[in-house]
Amino acid sequence: MSVSYMTHPLIKHKITLLRKSSTGTSEFRKLIEEIAMLMGYEALADLPTADIEVTTPIEKTVQPVLNGKKPAVVPILRAGLGMVGGILALIPSAKVGHIGLYRDPETHLPHEYYCKLPDSIEERQIIVVDPMLATGGSAVSAVDFIKARGGKKIKFMSVIAAPEGVSALMKAHPDIQLYVGSLDRCLNENAYICPGLGDAGDRIFGTI
Ligand code: PRP
Ligand code: URA
Image (cartoon, rainbow, N blue to C red):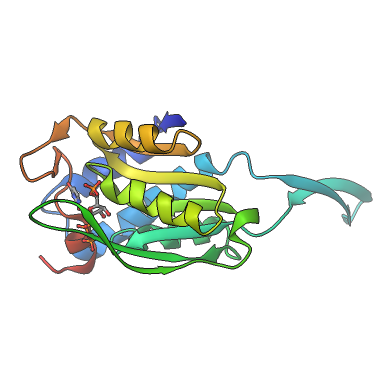
């Protein structure tokens, strides 16, 4: 698996604002979406293209357009929903699947409660989105489910990751590409990322 760590100053700046406990729900949602768009721009740099003929006001010319089945964005519920708009801003015609997982507060293990993916998933570029990669349990399970349903070309985008989560995902799914906005220091005793940003789902949906 390849892991790409984002270095763009705009992404770094926006992640710093996201972390602040004084950042309220509406600003938090806006930032998550903007970061997803900026990360998506980097992650989708290898989308396939094909040449077509177009006519400009000056002359006919052969130029590239996106080619192949439309990509599928797959947020891990709930917090991944906050990143979908950013990817759709780049590819408005992308399909959207959903995987519902929550971490048991005691064991920190993921539990699936929903999975619905677009058809022909095996032919699509899949972009799984979840702002937080902590123990990696949710990410590993989500990719397990997608592969079990035929998904093959998988990219995973997380805004903030712990080293433990990156290692777990790399070990379980060495064939996928991972994009990380910021690699943080460690997990605490409750499996929260330090320094992190707290509970991403609660901050996006205002359920704190
Ligand atoms: C958060 C986050 C990830 C998961 C990461 O979701 O959005 O899905 O935790 O933790 P892990 O790497 O240890 O599995 P959570 O379970 O809090 O659910 P929510 O999005 O519904 O709040
Ligand atoms: N899930 C979150 O929302 N935040 C963390 O720090 C870890 C898991």
